[in-house]
Image 1: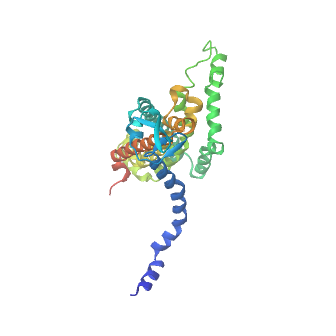
Image 2: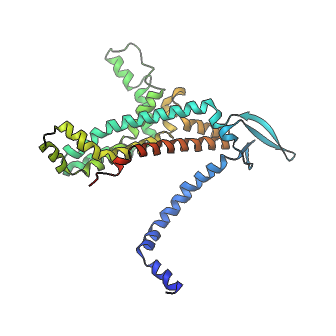
Image 3: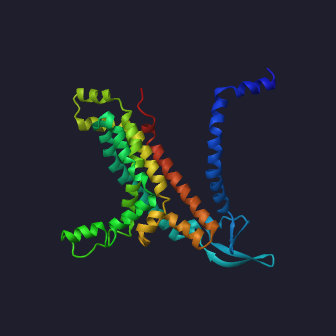
Length: 316
């Protein structure tokens, strides 16, 4: 077969048709996602200059100490000194706090979302399930920023909760511990990401063969035991998906900590924002961003490794 005939045959294959179909969105994703990530990675190995980035390779942005340099008569002159990401106690403290907050949000969201998904899947009539899913997605109708501001109003010093407690005579003065702290961040993020957890769990529950549950009860198992031994293991792929969908974006959220977190609730994204917008230190900010992505990737891979048997689904 000639080379021209071979290419013609490949062009008519299903694989070539599939590649042609996905190539536009793939190129779009590469330009909008991969290119910025590569740029941030490159910036993290460059030297910070006075109002500029000096193209000189260095690892000090990760391990420090680093310096901010200015070009004077063709020579680099150090203007200031700062610590690298992994040698800075502040970054390590904020990174651990971010993991703690994201883990708390994930646990709260999944535990609260599972009963909702279970109720819609098992106790709602099939003709009304679409309506329930529609109601669950209603929060997406409003801006994420507006939803955060609403929680700020609810948890505020003169907010809904304090006003209700004062009106009922339960407290004598407004509570100050329900806002501008880590707890407020967890509550707000758990509400914001609840639909992201409900939907994958609902899909996993819908795929469960109901005859398996009937068989378990026919064998003498109680409803609770059947849930633990049949329903929950079969729904674990959806739970794992919900955990990852909630955990990964919440650790990089900076709007919610900025508005309801206060000094005690700032996360790693706020620290990165500070380096970029306030201190104009793009290399250090990039090193912090890359470090945060590496930590999130490592934690996610460990979680997937520990749950690999659930992701494989039921074995025949």
